Length: 337
Image 1 (cartoon, helix red, strand yellow):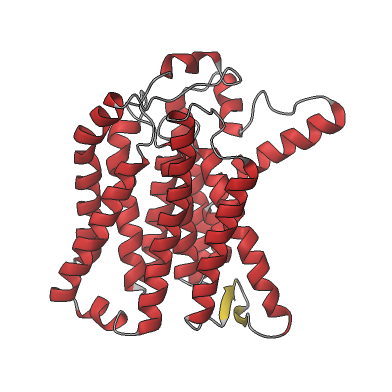
Image 2 (tube, rainbow, N blue to C red):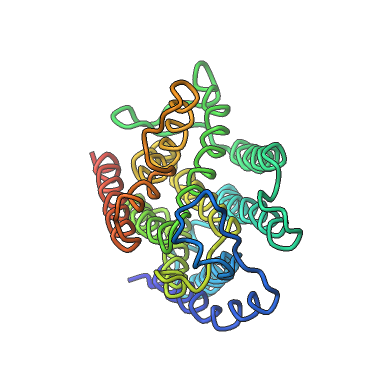
C-alpha cells in the first residue's frame, strides 16, 4: 500500500493547524484586521478586526504536504516516481501548483491593498481581471506545450482540442478558470464555508484521481484537503482568522488545477456546484435588480440570503457542504460510467 497521499494530508493538516499559533498573533500584531462593510448583515460587525490573510496558513500546509509527500514518495513509492519520470507529467504537476499559487498571490495583493493601504475594495476590477486572465492563460499555455491534445466529456470520452471545433476548448477554458476562481472567492463569506466546501471537493478529487491512477494529483488533492481541515480549526465559527482573498483565490486556483490535472475539467460543473450557485445568485440578483428594481434574494451571495432568513452559520456550512458532497458523488458516477 502506498502511504504517500496519506503523508501529504497529515503533513498539510499538521502544518496548517500549527501555523495558526504563529501566523494569527503575527497578523494581530501587524493589525491586519478585516474591515466589515456596512452592506453586509449587521451582526457581522462584531467580526470587525478579526485577522485576515489567513490563507497564508493554507498555503504553508499545502506546500509542506506536497514537499514531504514527494520526498517520501521519491524514496519509498515506485508509483509516484514512475509517473513523474516523464517530463510532461512533471510540467503539468508544477503548472497546477503554480496556478493555485498565482491566484493566491493575486488575492494576497488584493488583501494587502485593503488592509495596509486602507482601500476597502483592494485591486480594481480591471487590475484583478487582467491578472487572473494572465495567470489563467499562462497555465493553459503550459498545458498545451506539455502535449495536452484532448479533454474528456461525459458519455463521449476524449475529444480533440487541437483540431476542428475542439479548438474552442481553449477560450472556453480561459473563461472557465477565471469564472471559477471568482466563484470560490464569493463562497468565502461566513465562518468556515469556503474551507469546508473545498475540503469536501478535495476529498472528491482524492477519490477521482485515485480511481484514475493519477498519483501526482492524488497527492495535491490530499494536501489541499489536509490544509483546509487544519485551517478549519481556526476558521470554524466563531472564526479566529479569515482566509481573505489570499486563501479563497488560492483555493479557487487549486480546485481548478485538480479538475484539469485529472483531465476532467467539465466535472467541476458538478463537483463545484456550490461555487456555481454562489456566483449565479450574485449575477441573478444584479440582473433582476437592474431590470425591475426588486431583489430576488434578501442578500447575495446566496449564503447571506439563508443567513438573513435565520439560518445559523454552522447550519449553512453543513448544508452547503452536503450539497457539495452530492455534486461530486454525481460527477464521480459519471467517471465510473
